[in-house]
Image: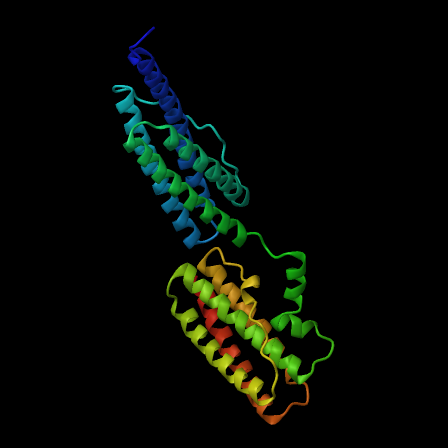
Length: 301
């Protein structure tokens, strides 16, 4: 009978270390592939906040890559890994973020499995922290997917029935319908300009006109209360498309104000109570001024 279990323990330890080195090689290749992929996705990102977030995710992956290389060198007594790209990143942003989301989810499970089987507490901690990072990345990539999913069939129909488009598509209009379409379009303008400010930072033209849109909403609120018309739900975020650059942002402002002016001009062809006519005329005239400001901005870019 063998009373000395040390040789078998030693062999088990060696097998465990060999498996850890193999897993490290796979993890290093995964991080190396992610660094290349996320560099491409940052270049393809549709707006600055998304690009910045992907670059931050890539910084996390760079940290993991550096930690894993250091650990590999330590475990192999000075060996250097030869990283390889093991997965090709799609060429489109939409397919790329879907690919990244799935890859991050798989990586979470892989890193947690390494942590569970690691004997060294410091190795466990490295991979648990990395797994937590990867889970956070997966959440961000899922949010990018949701943002870029585009409107559904029902939502596309709603776009044609919302705000200025809805008003211009309507064969006839009642006062409550006019108020509803007007408020929806002011919601849409407010959301559009806030999205542009979030994306490109403070731009004086958009900041000032966004403040004006708040006053438009307040003026309409008075009419809703006076004529006891229920306020419409603000679903304007469904219809916001972030422009690729500031020039396109000005172009979106021009199109939005043209639609808004056309809507109020249509309303003003109807017989209206005097107070409603005054408010619609004031809002139309304000939009004419906004249109001129956006056109100047477009010419500058």
